[in-house]
Image (cartoon, rainbow over all chains, first blue to last red; front, side, top):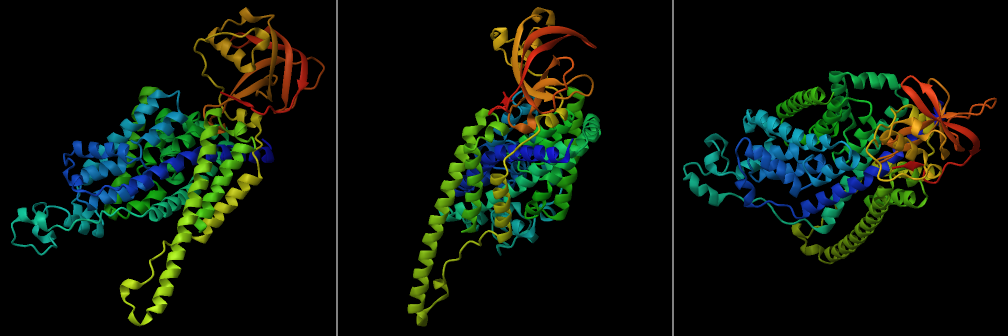
Length: 325
Length: 246
């Protein structure tokens, strides 16, 4: 292939990927901004189920009500945690909602209309992953899992009988725990101004658009410059292809509302398990997300999330390869 | 202010792409209205943000002048309202650079290079709803027809009038091909027909667009008899305005 022709083809691929993904990114940011404007923060959050299975499932289902990509989900998950929502519910939302929402399901369908198995496997895989990660992180005491500021706010919004004496900071030692409910401070639930919402939404869009540009550029270059035999060889090996696409998902760090379009560029060259691994891991952990997740979780929690998500996605990918290959 | 500028640049990229015909080369038709609509929404949001920024600045000016008047009695609550920090300049600069490049440099892909890197499209094997007369079938119609009713002997002697680009093959003479897309150029996959090129003429160049008139014939291939277009008349043509097929 001539270098100039190769570059011209890469440039066209880059434009195709980017121009197709930008409207979906805009839709995601608009809904995220709307959700922020109508931000919930009421007492009903604390009444969400705390059951180890029902909790994460409820959190995952909240993705349908608050559809956003993983970046938009972090502040919402923080809101859930500080409002005193059960840990499993908040984590279920954090890990599954980036996939289990109408925008991502629609974009996955738009990208892979002729692969119905993927339309089912992606949300099911995301829920399984969220259940596993919630169960794993629930083994760690909250004080060692959550960042100090999140924990402090959370303690203020939890009934005192759920907090140990040493963890109470309300000065209510000796009081009847049942009466502590009346003395809790309510979190600020004021609706942000239109200007604030617009500023936040546009900033989010501009930042994500630049990350999308980088992801599209990498995908376009991979398609046109990487020797076909190498990628096909890698993509044909079941386990290696899964690991390769997991690494790619982490590095590319593309928003879950558009990652299906990027996955299209590899779809023909990798195993089905690797394709699903790419679509499952990116929404849970990637380089772009580490900083955001660091606002919620301590390093130990981050490490467990990364290791657990990696292992879970590898297992799901292997199972899919056994089924589809 | 710079936030609005960044959004205007992305809006211009989408609106320019919607009007200069490049979407026909990049995306499936169904996505074209979405791109244009997204561009318009971005423009509206940018204008809305500018209006809000101007209003806020006006309020701040009034506030400052009031503070100057009441300097003697100033209290901490009377400080000017905090403005949201503006978008870092380097992010807006990068956005502007990328946006200008996208607007200024239209796509011009080599379909042959693209097709060479992709496996052939294997979809379209379901039964066809109806079949056009032979001379009206496009290259894609022929490929789909052969997939649904695979006996090539049924079509020998049928007149052919097809267009496509020249796709060199690793073994054997080049084929005439088209790219099928589901979403965008990234998922384009080639479909092609074998061509018996006229003897004593140079082989056509890769990526060249041709219109071929001829008849269908048979030629042996490793997987049995294969349908081949016996070219009687070959006319070079420009790349069509809508070269991608659904």
